[in-house]
Structures are given as structure tokens and as C-alpha cells.
Length: 370
Image (cartoon, rainbow, N blue to C red):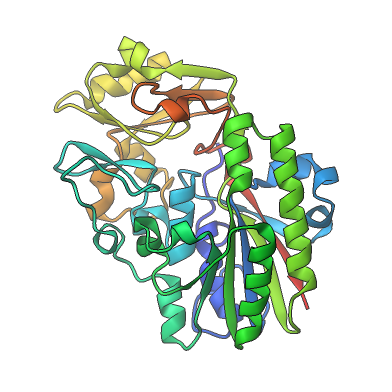
């Protein structure tokens, strides 16, 4: 088990350090060196161990000096983007999983797609009310730029964790590199984030290490090389990821396993980080059943045990506690706990993430300076 290194070695420590490098009054927990311009290349799914396993498909990145950070728990996109967008731990920003119960409603809410059952409206500014690092930067006179597909602009997740950025829509890899270079030259200091998600998508559908995944890794490596080559003087490029990935070798259908569903009101989270919300009075029974059924396959703890163990950070705000499952089940090895009727697409995945294993937690932080 890799418990995230909050406070000096996690993704939550990176955004403040980037602003500190630009001269803003922010904590520089990662001790980044000063720069006039910073560019963060965020590659969805580029785990540090995955990158090390295929240096031939990423020759540029494999030669760049850097270090390893931990993603945070769960090691999933919505949680990591929230940590990168706020500089806070999951327990502070409250985005503690992919599918979370909305307290008092009896319904699950998809924090990534920002979808909920009809009649349930989740306001992004209320669900994640903390000021973002981009808002803080803008107040200090630095206008952050976010280079990503146009479809992301104005979404619920963008409103929750990217408040304060100027969205620079770009679709292809070439467009994103060009947009990033232009944004870096517009002003000084400059803060630019470039997002690329196709590596993660390929890993989910065909598995990390597949031909499709390796093709995407080569694209990522070429993007990083070109971003570095076009940096203006006094710039720093940082390459990181939101999580790694594992390929499933043992899928457990929770819906077809009576022991796992008895006493369960809602099955949230995702296949490698399940939030299990129980019926009134059933929490102890459900915890025991999940522990016994998933013995030697998953770490299964109560909500309080997960909080006390620091999985979500040193502190969890009282307001967010009910978002965490009464039982938290975190598979290891190649195990994935699926729910095919509720989440059919996820059940068909080959690659998964969310857990506390090194392959999912460890992400690179690579640096190129001019």
C-alpha cells in the first residue's frame, strides 16, 4: 500500500509550488526553482512505472531528469484534477471519488461527467467551494491559460476546479503545442497548462502496454519534446500525470455476488476504489462481508479507518465525510470490482486505476528549463 505523501510529495503540493516559482506568495513544498514562465504538461494516465517500462516509445521523456510524486486517493482523474486545481488534499477539496453519494438524496453523482439523476442539480461552486490556484494567480496579476479540447470549456468539472483560467481550445496534438507556445509568449510571468487525455482512454479500452497505448505514448513523448524545444528563455516545462494504471486480470461482478450487495444502498466510487454506502444499521455487517469476500484481493476499511489512515489527507472536512462510503474497498493486484448493469462501459475496461498501488499512485514530475 502506497499512502499518498501529502505535504511534500504529492500532486496537491505541485500547484502552489508552480506559483511560488513564478514569484507568488505560495508554499513551495516541492522547492521548485524560480522561472519567468511555467508550462505544465498534464498527461492523463502517464504513471511513472508505466513510463519506465517503455523507454523505447518515450525516448525524450526517459532522458529528462525528474522525480516521482504520489497522486492522492483515490488515484483517479477527478480527484487529481481537483488537487491540481486547488492545491488542496482530497479531504479538503471534497472531490473524494468518481461516483459519490449526494448526502440526503439517496443518489449518486458522477463528479467527472458532472451527471446526476433527473431533478438533482449539483452546483459546481457549492460542491467544490475552495478558491482555485488559478483564481489566486489571477488576483496576483498572472492570467493562467488552460489548453484543452473545446468541449471542456464551461463543464461542471471545469467550473469546479479550473475557475480563473482562460480556456484556449485546441484539439490535435499540433494545435495544443502551438497554443501553449503562443500563450507562453503572451506575457511574463506566464502560467500555462496543457492537457492530453488520449493515453488514458487507450489504456482503459485496450490496456496499458497495448499497441494502441504505445502509439499514444509516442505521441505524448513527441508533444513533450516539441513543447520543450519551443520554450521561451526563462521558462520551465513540467510533465506530470494524474494517476497510473493496472490491467485487470480478475474482475469481480459485485452485482452478481450476493454477499457484496446485502445491506448496500449505493455502490459508488469505481472499480479500483469503491465507496460502498450502506442501509441504516448495516455498516458493520457490510464491512465484515466485503472483508471476507475480498480477502487477499482488496484493502477493505470503514470510513473512519480510511480517514484516520490519512488516505484523503491529514484532515477531512466534516462537510465532506458523508461523501465517503461507509465502507471503502480498494482492490490490489489485478482485481477490479465491477457493476455491469450500473456501469456497463467501465465493466468492459481492461485498464483501471484508483487504488493505492505503486503502479497507480506514482506519477512523474519531469522538468526542462531554458
